[in-house]
Picture 1: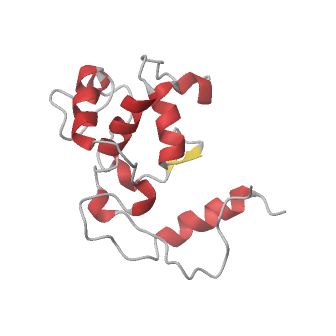
Picture 2: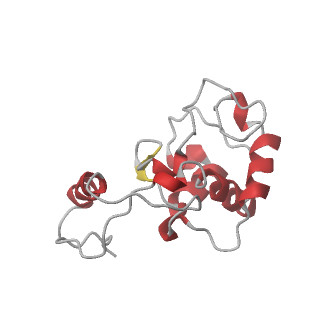
Picture 3: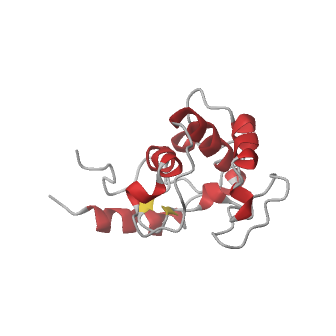
Length: 145
């Protein structure tokens, strides 16, 4: 059974060879069914995420403790350890230390539903330039079960 690391590395390398998206909405693999990006933007503001992060479209979000979240949809990794996709981002927003105990990002009491909306907003940031791998890749990059 091949390890996931070489597969992920292949995916990230191939991302540079693909065409850019033309839409300002996230590509299908970053869509979160039932989530509302605008509500997520308001939640990001109300939870004070801008205290630590600079976040496009969120009033006063000019923090410099955590990374800038501009063009978030274009990021390939989350917290430097996981692929940046909804199935990882939503639990990260709910309880970051449960995923990476050494993170400086605290558990803020975000619910799963709120995290889905917040993630949906973050995936609108830079969505127009997300690179998507073509369907006919010469290697199978699907995760192992």
